Length: 388
Image 1 (tube, one colour):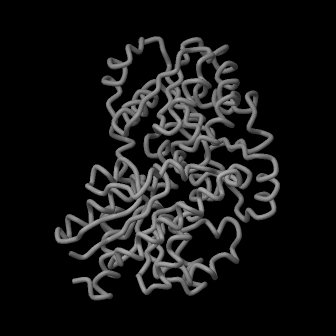
Image 2: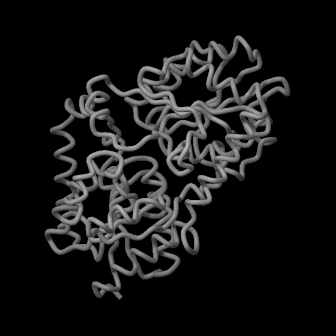
């Protein structure tokens, strides 16, 4: 059988990898799959070479203590790919890990497709030159990315953003309220501190401080935290002294039900910078984007970042649709003020939703769902190399 090897390094990549595998299998039932991923890929019948949660690190200083273990995991992944000799290697996001597997695979003559363009357009633009040595094609999620990679001579396909098929706008608010016994007077807010342990540990105390301030003006406030299993315990511990007992939800269905309940209640979101902001836009939830790095990592990043906004919604809309609170401004007082505004002023919430529409309109692929467009691009490589 023709083997497709899929490598994902974190929860979001696991979801993308699973959707891609399903779309590929729908077109080519004869395909076989192997790789590195998490529970979503396992549901598609692809067990992981090792527990991908070991890769859930963020920031220069956070990586250093585990550098030798990470090198071992990379070596194990490279050895497995070399042994299996797949028709194509698909690396999904997490470039710090996945592209270190891609380079030696490509050197062996194995075609490599990287799904989710590395954000070298945002920082380290010179890094794009090396991508030609690591991948045969990049699948871009954002509409402004292809021209950047094309100019550098890297083959690229815009496949649309998978958030459009996430179901974030199809939750059941009544079910969420019933399951969690949420009273009519309670006003839920979404809190998303990220899927990496270091992110959650750094942001949760700040988010908790912001919620205490918000609760002084909105007594019925009830925080709702969609959590990945890898950070669930850290979240429970950090939220133990919050002003209202937080509701923790796991899994996409429960998360999307929470989104629906927040939207219906005219709530808002306190969101870590990243794809979560796009989920909020799809669900129609006004929000504030926040992030704080280790000071040394932040100082390095400040010298390298080349874009005017941290939020993908703002980048796509080319203006500040949602407020951003990064580094110093990521503090309880500033976050509380930004979170309260759309909850207290319907005009502010409505203005954000107009901006959401502008941003999301740019994320649609020329045809089909994003996962289907990605599958077509991957199959093009397979068939080009004789994997009929």
